Image (cartoon, rainbow, N blue to C red; front, side, top):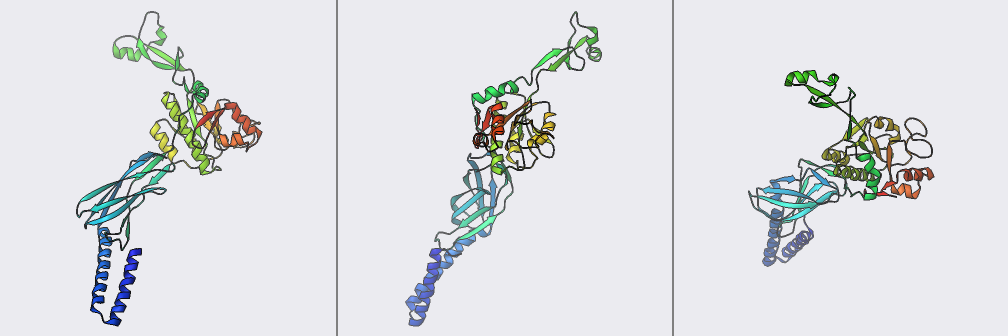
Length: 373
């Protein structure tokens, strides 16, 4: 379509043509032909480079919300062109850059910097290429679909030492153990030493090695921890985003301490992740889709781990039965709640909610920062 300059030139050419016809002036006809030629040149230089254009878009498969992410767009056209503008990215996170020149048959690469505004799993959007040509009289635009996707992880925050003081007792010791002599707690085998009980000889291994070996045993002293994300379907996306950032921050802090920890949620059943990449990929795509965390607490407790529950809605769940916590807003034994600071400080759910917060002393902010109070 014509730009403002192109529209002005087109109107001027029409007016000069009418004037030249009335006056029968050859000079005006020549001037009008010049303007029409400019319009044809402007249209050709704007539209032709986009007709047979090949585009590819490359982006990392993972990123972090709020952190700039590089995106590369390559262009190859059957016709040369100048002053193209390439725009790429995904919905809610797009950027554009000027391509000064595209030479026929040659590949041109342009780098964009996209800043993801929020977490999620996104498909790469179509690349939009715009051209105004060197004269700027016409503007052409073409959208070319590309394949690919990106997972934007929630942004994590450092966990203060005051918070870790609350969590270290449950995070550490998950992998420690104590030697026992209980037959059901097999740990491994070792060479026989004088005084060992013959009842502990592992005869199959002894026959294989040609020497006596003894069975050793280990009993875990304490279970590990599970960081639970509250996926209560009644919460808003913004509430879940804050809970996800806080859970990611706590999970990262636990991994840094080499603790025995898993990240857990409820999606028609217990879902748990141990590795960082798998856990953060899971956090990236979470939506509010589950019953209140109190209703699934018995199933989560069956994991045999201490539960660090990042709650999004305080006081969710039935009042007395079906997995709810006791009256008065307290939480069951083996559960450490981490509550939204806005609800605790504001008292939006009553005095019992504030009491629940004081029991653990841990709250989190919208940006995922976890605090002790």
